Length: 230
Image (spheres, rainbow, N blue to C red):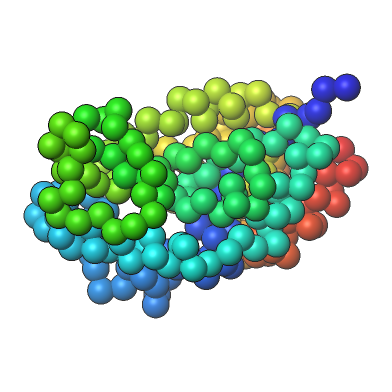
């Protein structure tokens, strides 16, 4: 029997419970930096060393934290569902928890790419320094989609969402586009579950939307129980 297609869209909230801060946190890792200084092409042109140092610190932090119960619970759902994760997060916590199909909309912190050759993308677990170059002598940069840059994976994400039997949206403020508009591509008869302690208003969907006002680690088990009744 074919498994139902479960599309799970995750945001910063699910990783926050593992100890990864975001720029939306008042005391977060981004504190003291204007977001455009460290996460935009303009910031990169203005102060490359600052941007590299910023992401080097984020990478070091990522390697010190672990997936949480929500990550593991989503991975375990692969026993009963065809689960596709679409994440705005640049960490690898879904993969470490065991999820096998993860699409990163905004890039991956543990990868770097060339500023000269867009096809040169390699693993990165150490610091990137000013002067580190690809074989074609292009400076290496974090493999992150910065503000103002295109989101290359969005078309694939739309295609995946269009095939969903069930959609779950977890730990996102629904403020960052184009990711925030993805649920609009779900088939109209596919139920949508939105898990967040401070859920945003959801407009314009013909789908049945059920809001679970809880953190990811508390809300995902509730969602899993509801899945059993579908």
